[in-house]
Image 1 (cartoon, rainbow, N blue to C red):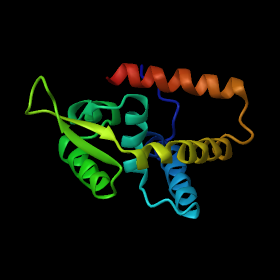
Image 2: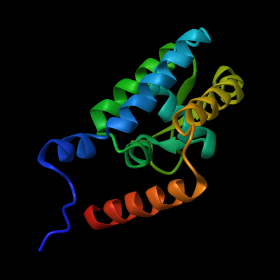
Image 3: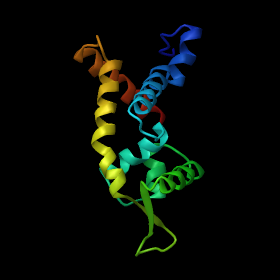
Length: 146
């Protein structure tokens, strides 16, 4: 017997990530109000490069759950904004490694502060216990489907 505790109309909202979409929209709004001209998608690539600079485009695909054409387009646009640069790998010249520029490094603190502010807005009134339960449930859902 399936463990489906959702009414028919609730399931679609759950699956599509209504909360995730709302957080992304708010973060984009907060970026715009701070006069930052980057998209959430671009920021997600920068976020992973701040954690590990010099990733390959394939590693960025895996980290951001995006396909190769999407990452190529995002990296192209980030290059135009002078936030990243492509460098051919010394081991395999078919692979480009993506590195942050000084301009991107200067964005890190401000954008991370805005992300923290956005998350605080999203979690207003949510207890630590509720957050832990949500993290456990979502991790289990992810593990079941990966």
